[in-house]
Length: 209
Image (cartoon, rainbow, N blue to C red):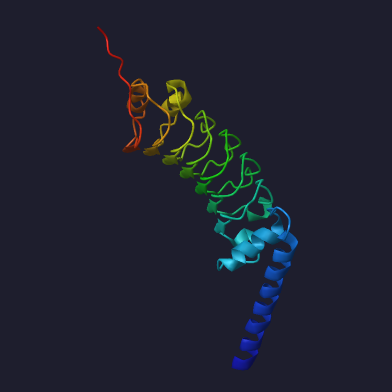
């Protein structure tokens, strides 16, 4: 029995190795694509499951993906790592209704959009992108942590929507271009806010007289 189990394990490992090699050959000379085969292999490589809907976590960071797609079979995900890819649009995530944590930092995203279906989301990281306006989070009533540091936020109007996101308790706006002291009124309206990071932001108070 021991020998048989070892043989089965060796056989499965050989199959997985073959699949990894096939994936490398498929991607060689081409931009990586978020298809089912690729995402399943990422799960297996990180001690996950070959059956997509059994996975709680998907580590798809540092892969060079240009488009979010192929996530429909992974509808039970609780956490998704997509940082440090080449993503410019948030899309095709409507199926992830159980998702709690989404990491989209270090991409090329310009708009906060297509997030309305993620009503279970508690943590959203959009740091180090190119976002000009905070928007599109009205349906995320469970969201407690938002990191949008190192983006292109500049005016009070760019962050005004934060007043409406009452569930947020932790907010990071560090290293944006905000200079107007009026932004403080936005934070005053965030009645559940417990932690605020504004590292690198120097408010400009005009001198009179």
